[in-house]
Length: 120
Length: 433
Image 1: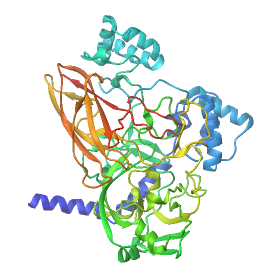
Image 2 (image 1 turned 180 degrees about the vertical axis):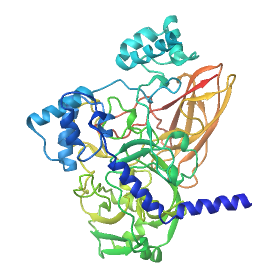
Image 3 (image 1 turned 180 degrees about the horizontal axis):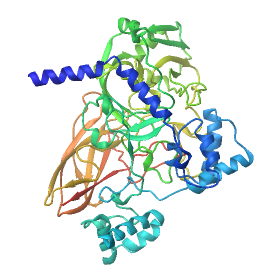
Image 4 (image 1 turned 90 degrees about the vertical axis):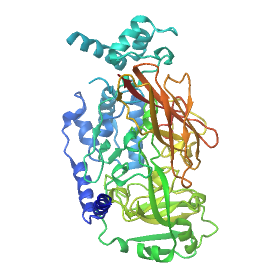
């Protein structure tokens, strides 16, 4: 009984910690603000332009997890303009970025789960 | 042993670089498995594959599926969730952490479209506005809500609209969720319909539009603002929630008040909820229209371009299951011949009629026991025992069937550019011995 009582008290204390909400909000902001180096992206022509333009809004996880054809990367430029208020991107600059993304983050063979749990 | 290690790598790398050739080399183009291929695969996995001959041609063993090693969230008050992205901050709950019947706060997945707002100074003074097609627009504090309307409590599943997206091939845009963007907490709040009736719905109130306090990452406008048909807003289980698991709602999950629209895409369950509009026409906020939270009515070619004009809004989520007793990659003692397993299953607005499990790549299926939900829109516990004929590499395939008889399919169906509705049969790899 004592053990159960202590456990309950601990749980309630954790959940009602008046400062936890603030600390979690700060932790989320800290994670979001975590500095990234350009080199987190694959090396290649257009990397600097891609890194600079894209990370104005989001970090590179959205790029690194992606595996799209050139057409789909191109569509996503318009989608971000239309739906997410990105400054329109055209001409040579757009070509540079879309070419870079298509070359380094193109389609790849994937399975239903990531990695091999019995190796590595 | 360097030579052994090289062999392991070569098979895995072959699958990554040229899966068709790997398939031909390892499995053979014919239906029967070549001796050399079996040996190669066995070396790659470090084990024999007793049911290898039943693995459909072209399917990779789950353990050989390619992907980068996941990164994990480290945050006070949160479990070791799979980090999907830092900005916006998104994190998925590994299936094996979903074993609790009531999802605790630390194991609740994190989905943000924008920035996490600062905590409210005085939660009871938080205001919620009801306006648009109503007779009497309302502005209610949380104190008013509790005083004026009955509080109800229920276990409600709430799932990201993109849950399962990683199942799509070719890849769809968005967080590459496995099955872990799902929760089943115990929510307390007031029924949205009670509040809407207090405001008095006009004849033209056919749709809702939801608003919250989080801002878009570009700092321009709201993070997301979605809406639904009025029928769902008037359902018994659709709540303005003010407590989760008997406690104030955690900041990461929408404190101090959020909508809870169980069974429908989680984006409707507006976090940091501030306002609901009643509208005569569908809402046009960020996250509405085009390919956002919308799916093809006439199926399209996977990977093709489409602006979504003919798509329909995603409503009730499809049937899905998770295995919670054993993690993908679990090692079991040599000689293990029977294994008790369990998990959870749910089906949007419907319930789950059956869960079946296969450990021989789908050659035979075995019915599991499925418990009734404690209330509508709660997920359901499934459990049972499977048998292994030998030591070696096995995959546990688990498949739920909803109350209309629809099963999880073998492959993600109805591909769409932003990847909604993927609910293929899940596969967890286990190694006996």
